Amino acid sequence: GDSVTQMEGPVTLSEEAFLTINCTYTATGYPSLFWYVQYPGEGLQLLLKATKADDKGSNKGFEATYRKETTSFHLEKGSVQVSDSAVYFCALLNQAGTALIFGKGTTLSVSS
Amino acid sequence: GAVVSQHPSRVICKSGTSVKIECRSLDFQATTMFWYRQFPKQSLMLMATSNEGSKATYEQGVEKDKFLINHASLTLSTLTVTSAHPEDSSFYICSAAGTEGSTDTQYFGPGTRLTVL
Image 1 (tube, rainbow over the protein chains, first blue to last red):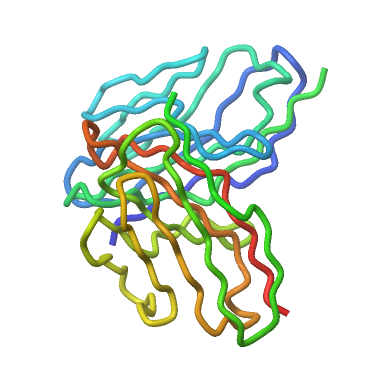
Image 2: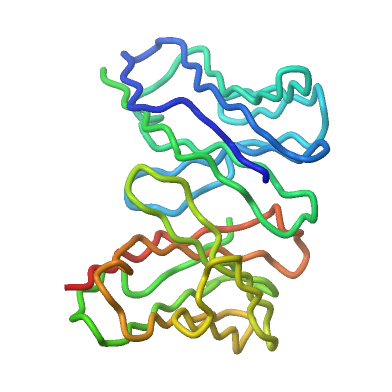
């Protein structure tokens, strides 16, 4: 069945460091892909998404490119801030379009 | 942005009792609501999908008689864990999709931590 695998955390970085969180998926066809972020004490929020191969989603300085060759959707940011500390979830929309399948989440901790 | 609330945020109960968790969309109408369960260091697992006014659709392996879902209005869905046992202890998260949006536009609640003693 459909699944999402993302790198295990926690990821600990200093402010202004470069961030990469890896995400790969297994699915039938070419699903829409998402990154969600969960700040402490809050619900998941959609960070960015891509709906077809080679699409690049971007928001708040974060980017991710839909790579069908490698079935990947890695999240990147050139310069992280303390306020980016959160849990990041990679997800895909199943073929029927009825459910989101999530990865386990990666905790990012940024220190000043 | 759209806001979804959950109540309570944390609940502790004795084994054998039932617990109700509410999920509300505060500033939009949600035709579809989703209930997820999250174990420590695990991904969110979809339990069921509910549409306003109809029966919920449960994922494989989820006991519908144990996890009762009601979606009586466009702003409220409830999850009742009946005869709870310690293995039901988990983090339960709901999400809602608006009337104009598709399933991929989900707004998530902050979650409810259930501990069964």
